[in-house]
Image (cartoon, rainbow over all chains, first blue to last red; front, side, top):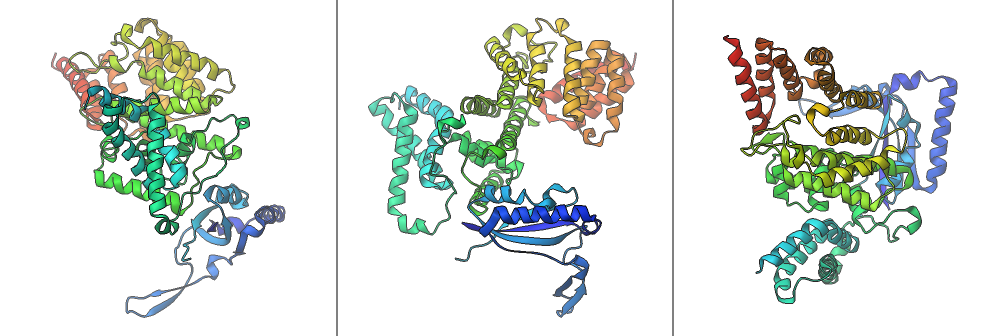
Length: 118
Length: 413
């Protein structure tokens, strides 16, 4: 078994604009994902909007600068993640395909194997 | 070493490489080790067959030798290898009820064409691992340095292991999408071979042969898949003309100029037979429509007999389901032959604004041809000049240069 990180990206404005019905369907799809993946889900959280983010990096004068906003400025921001365990990539692809973000035009998920320092 | 043995080994390489390699991968679950062992088996054949004679079942002989060699290595290095990440492979072999005859080659091809790999990587891996081309040959086909191609293949293999792309025939819910990805790779290999984008040769025979071989293999292993059937039909119908596309002195011959008696009648009838089956399903697949167009050409006894209304109608079907600027260009050309060059030119005009065709030499060449037939010499000259700046295939360049000379000669009069 290998661990995979499923990173959920999307347009925060679109997420904000969801109607109550859409939101319910969205949560139901996540529940279906969790039910299907069962114990394979090791962790997963929804993140606050990227406007709530704080970024630290080195400034030109070798000091750490603290700034407002995400590390990468993009229309699509990281909105949440799941850490799952699966036998292979096809299994993760099948699971992740259940996520509602995969079926909305403005969002998507990125699957990354986690390095095993075993 | 006898020529017969060398020929037999070469034939076994062409025909059986994928089977020998795939069957060794299943044992090693390591692509590099399997490659090494399969290559060793072929070297061993060159050494052994002159003495023992060519075996009745060369593929079986080679597989046994490759697998034995792999078992030796695995035994010797068992401790060392425990630490290595292995390919994810099922122990179970699909049963007869799922309709797939799997001898390893299907898993191999689905792994090489997995959508998590870039298209470049899919093509390179397929040619290298399924068709058995050397890294140097693959590099030459795609005009990159051998070291670049070697690095591309190594990276792709690493991704297969690290991301755990499984060595497996995809599950039924993923199968259709994955078959399409495989067929796109096969089609790309064929078109690159059919008219090489750059270089002295018009056709890269090794690539065209590899693509036809892949399509035949897929059809054999998944006989019920209509998309595969249609692609094989398309490749055979187009490939039937391969040897008539150049004159004796190496000049490009257009469809209208080719010697139709030299078209490969066996390939044409095989293609038409496959297509008949593929067209039974509605709606037809994209490759079935393209194959139907190729079949109309293949079955016309002369250029004058070409059923242009039928070809235009087939392009209409193609455009309805799979709209693309290239299909529109081809439809415009067909209209030009059905209704005359002026109608063709009109049909082409809207495409001139399409940015995706801005560097597509066939658009300029088609326009140039219509203008030439309309005797609009200055415009034709400009269009041929433009087409020449957009193609790097020497044979096509020679053809365009000759036409350019012809239309220019009218300018002064």
